[in-house]
Amino acid sequence: MECCIVARLKTQPMWFSMLFVVGFVTILKFLLILLRGLYVNFLRPPKNLKKYGSWALVTGPTDGIGKSFAFELARKGLNLVLVGRNPDKLKDVSDSIIAKFGETEVKSVVVDFSGDLDQGVADISEAIQGLDLGVLINNVGVSYPYARFFHELDDNLLNNLIKVNVVGTTKVTQAVLSGMLKRKKGAIVNIGSGAAIVIPSDPLYAVYAATKSYVDQFSRCLYVEYKKSGIDVQCQVPLYVATKMASIKKSSFFVPSTDGYAKAGVRWIGYEPRCTPYWPHSILWAFTCSLPEFVVDAWRLWFCLGIRKRGLRKESMKKE
Ligand SMILES: NC(=O)c1ccc[n+]([C@@H]2O[C@H](COP(=O)([O-])OP(=O)(O)OC[C@H]3O[C@@H](n4cnc5c(N)ncnc54)[C@H](OP(=O)(O)O)[C@@H]3O)[C@@H](O)[C@H]2O)c1
Image 1 (cartoon, rainbow, N blue to C red):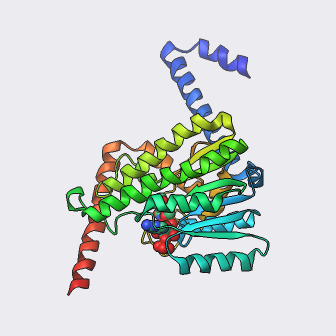
Image 2 (image 1 turned 90 degrees about the vertical axis):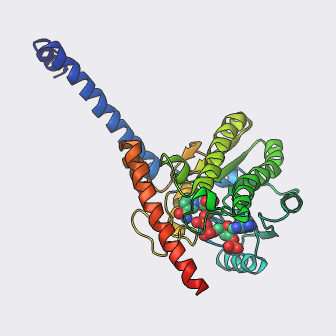
Image 3 (image 1 turned 135 degrees about the horizontal axis):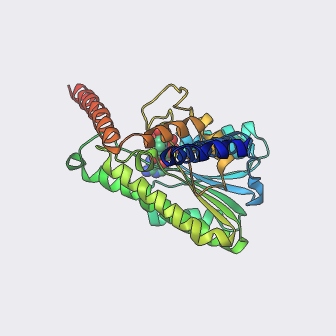
């Protein structure tokens, strides 16, 4: 069969043979990507997270993705350190986890990442002292209440975005890293965003997207720095997930529930340095990459201007 194809190609003009080879290589590449996608999403076994250590720390575990991560990690048999700003919500989550997974130990640390971070990080360091902490989920994050031009950002929002998304993630990572280095094992998951990686720009969310670019590059560099020390650093890149931050109440095929996202997210811990664990998000990512950047830029601008318009209308209705 191969010989037959080669023999027939020899009788064809040069341009045809070249076109055939390019087409063949392209199809082969596509098939390999598809097969790899099927394997990593559906067949690859998740890592045994207990091998990293018996405790996991989750920031922002009182709502959204972080809360579902906390439940999912408890389901995997890990004890939890929950770091959030609201003591009542922390207690609710902690009680529900203990009620559901009787043997899980849960410690709570109250930290407002937009407040005194030095004190917050000191409290976290104290709480994890002596714990076999193997997994860190740097999930806490804030975004704009609605899309805004950069010049419209007030100081408070600007500072919070940088403090919570950048400084918080960085300092919590530093606080847990020394213990992981001593034990020569650990998995760090930083929650990035499609806003910084999948789309070429996120107009009217510039500072949010920029903070998530930081998270992405920070993770990639740490992945290389600490791979040999047994620590797997990863940036997970969700697209839209149905949470209060995204202002999406109902999940759908392309917008998972937080539980759906966290289930997928936990399966990917310890593997690639950058990934989008929920597979329909990968389809959107591939589709976006196939479009010219100026088309995606224009679509995103139009989309975000719509969000801004609705946000302004809501705000003015509240004032009336
Ligand atoms: N949802 C999406 O579509 C999406 C897409 C891409 C990336 N992400 C990223 O995923 C992560 C989680 O987002 P989410 O949608 O789950 O958000 P969410 O539903 O708004 O939950 C955010 C969590 O962070 C906590 N938090 C917020 N500000 C805090 C502060 N100053 N101090 C301490 N805790 C604070 C919240 O606490 P309270 O319960 O007290 O409010 C809550 O537990 C973020 O890093 C976000 O950037 C989300």
